[in-house]
Length: 286
Ligand code: ATR
Image 1 (spheres, rainbow, N blue to C red):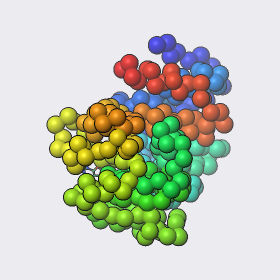
Image 2 (cartoon, protein in one colour):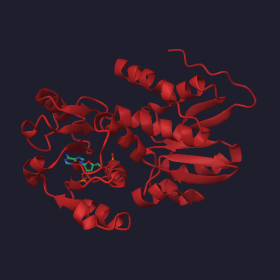
Image 3 (tube, helix red, strand yellow):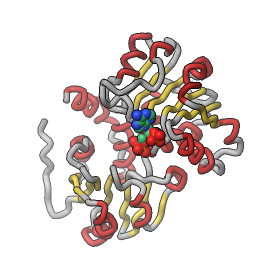
């Protein structure tokens, strides 16, 4: 696909900080967003080693780079170096998007938005739903933040290290008055019983990235009524099982595209909706 930008002296520069950054899909679709919205911008990958992160954030001011996405391993660390953080960053404790307005840098997190917007393709009304979240890492925090804001009735969290799930609950205490009723932490050996209680199952762990990963539970126990989401960008064994059962299911691609669209909107004020299907097709063909 032809992704050449027309550059001139007034082109605004955007990009992504990561280490490694070569695997990132963001330059491909953000470039498309600039082209399709006729905004004179360019989006480039910046390989930033952890020891250079502070300097890299300062360079945004020095070079008048208008905004960047932030990915592994910088999403938490980067918060230390910005002027301000949004409400969701305060709760999630990680940022994936920086906006530079005249040297004032504010950190946002568009992962919660991206996840919820993707999930709404399958479940337009989330209020009152019961959700099982597998995992309690960085991605899980963003997803749980999003789910709480959508007024889901219940979130069961299962994590290999239960303390991380406990920490999410404590950190979100100020977000919901009745957090003890909304969030329940369970063990992996309780997951199969919990399936009867929930409408939606979300895998936020890395289990399934490799075909030979040991399953998190017996996927045969999934019911056709379940909606199943895996934030990994491929049809994992969990999703294969969900498809076989006739469930509604989704991989991580909608979340990835929508978090990027939200970042683009934060930078430019434009929502690149026209690009959604095109971007999806580029990655499906990949
Ligand atoms: P991310 O930002 O992608 O969420 P992370 O913060 O490293 O990455 O979180 C990874 C998640 O996958 C965690 O919930 C982790 O469980 P622990 O908190 O116990 O480490 C989970 N995970 C990774 N490998 C796993 C495995 N083999 N079995 C179960 N959970 C696993």
